[in-house]
Image (cartoon, rainbow, N blue to C red; front, side, top):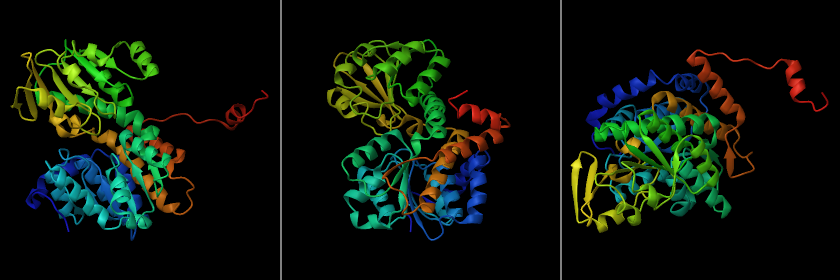
Length: 414
């Protein structure tokens, strides 16, 4: 069973998937390995990740390893209907479509939980939250799960602190091969891809305000600088703020930064980052977007309340007129801009992240019943395996320690 928009779109989706397959050698390697080893044979996997071509290939790799896949999206605007159709054409169970209402989105994620999954692969924590709150009777079926994002990990840690988390979750986002590359280089490129293709405006010579200077914010700021923009960073963490200063960026409070920004990008994982007190300080024509997981960083609902007029300014851009006469523009309804207005991270980057996901899921199965914590870091050997394989596919070699060097590094009496 599946619930998608149009099954006839599958050929377009297949072309997209074929393209990323040709650029994801790590997943190609794992597809061959899993096909031979069948680590997920007889298991149901529920997956909620932004449903585009790279995610589709992850689903196919897990299915090649024997998994019975139940797939949904993790954002109403990031699902690509042709990709969903291609997965259904290949025999996977998919419940997702682009532009889902809140009710439809909830129904779709419920469908993949109601099957009683053994493994959960989450992006933002919606599946984990749903099974704990609405389907607790299915929790005994769950071996464990993997979480893709910073936002999801924040939710998991809060659950664990409250002793509410009932099965082990691997913190995929914390793996070096995930956050150092996916969050920084993937987000940095894909955010500006989404902004540029949607606005068709120049970035050079303008001022970009980046809210949050974690790994994602670092990537967004770095790429904005590369495009010729002046960059202002807003932060709540003094250490990250100092880092931004030493990276060459201005640092100030959001209310002050609001006066100067031409583009605003929120990347914090928190809510109410840009609110009414900043909207009225903004220039006429300022453009706002969000690169955090949930659509609560830019207070779009609050902007609608104070706006005297709202209109569709351009495809995927809403215009809002304020009482002071200024117009502000919001891309993708304030949802994740790199997916609501683009195709997400580059294939070569997601190759690393999804390899970590796939290997972490296999690790959970292999160690079923032997994990003594609900919060699990990605094993170092998994991180290292992915990094070494990626280097090999890129055509690079590195040195190794000699026995004498290992002895030297492990000794204090030298």
